[in-house]
Image (tube, rainbow, N blue to C red; front, side, top):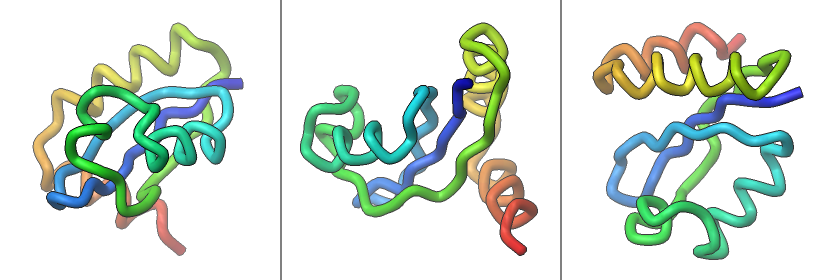
Length: 82
């Protein structure tokens, strides 16, 4: 099982990535051991996670979300909240 996730960075930008373990990956990002982008920007919190059945599906969904503008990403986050 893979997950697509969105993080809020310290400069209020939204980072999108994939992982098999969201909590472990979040901890890595917060410790400065994630990608270059989050190492430079810092991470405030996890905004969204979405399960995917396999790595291929996760990569496709990640690419789709990365093409979206901020407004579309925020709408996805808002829809997922109860």
